[in-house]
Image (tube, rainbow over all chains, first blue to last red; front, side, top):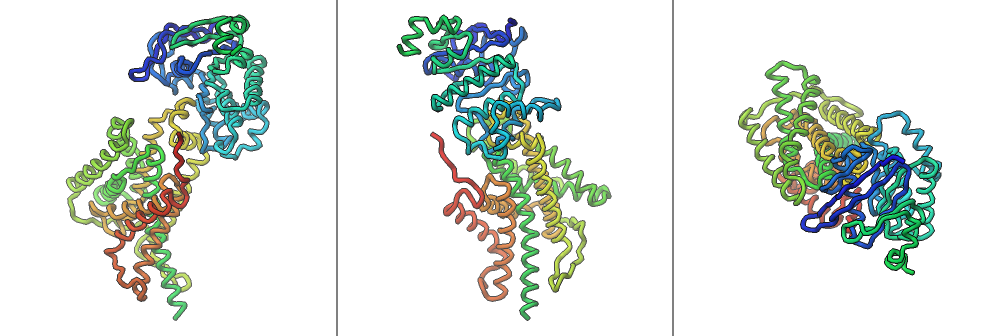
Length: 235
Length: 304
């Protein structure tokens, strides 16, 4: 498998706070990669560094090319970042949210993709005129995913999709992500505190501790790892 | 007698709607900028005055016909609005919004100073493209300029609605206004959207300025009162609500005209023209105390 994304000694700070110290990781095309870690370990910042939402040092390469831009440029190169807390436009309608996902596209297949997205989320077109803010938390998370798909991303970044959602919804969400990965080869980098479900849904995983990669391996290996079990799986 | 009074009343309504339409346009300009940047552009009125002078120069000094000059002024004002955002506002964006507010106050003074320096303080005459004739409709006598003003206002608001509702750039403008962080994540160049907002606001102001000049006379101070009425309109309708700006503008226009009108019939007979501005300020004050979000605004929810 080709390498899609490569982070080499990436660091980032918010003012005086060093959120990322030294993160190197690789995501290959067609993989689902999870990033685990406690609060403040740097998971969200890792995604923000990739999409250019925070300024960073170190090297980020997308398909072998150095990527330096901000979030607008990231969106244009095919990185779809679903931020923590869903990131839907609550004042806009469901359809408008989906259309914004395709904002950077110039082709004429946006309409076709709307129906492709509705294959996964049949309710979205039916309730297209509804304001996104009136959706439930789970529906908003699905809408954020649908919007990301509308950009035809090469790489999907998911930030804590489980946050504030009922376990059943979380399972449904990850089932769809897995489905997209298997059926369409969608590459996903997902940051998650819910280690159990993230390890179940991913091929490989990294564990961050205070802004560094502490552990890496296949999700299978990490599930069996003693310290992962004790710190993140809780048994 | 009653019919005559009714005709007189309707005349006042129409004239109130015409001036209200102008307040609505300027209020819309204020709303567009407030929605996207959270600040009130105190220079909005002076920018409109400048636009009206540009139109006057094209018509009087360069012999342009009215409508080509009108359109050219819109284009110049749009580009000017974009330029003001890029050159003056953008450098102070980020951080405390008070900085931008102070810059817009500085802009008010600077633009006013420029207008006086360039064109002098003497009032000029910008003639109405609709002429000075009047129409009579069932006893109601209506000035052509009032009808024209209302018509232009309706067309502009309709075009603006089409832009925001049905175009990709309109959707991007709304997205950038309500949620700039997410907007950048979907690839919208938010700073350009803000500049575009300033351009649109300047264009709306230009229309308001060009429609105001024929009735009150073109002079450097002509939009200062109108800006206060537009404030009242925007606050009344809801400072983030475009529909609120339109409804608020019309309400303020009709209300002020009605106050002057009823004083002729003994009610509010103390109300004279000089009290129009204080009345507008009273509207602002009452709305802020009773319903701060305005008629169409949503109450502000503080997220923890």
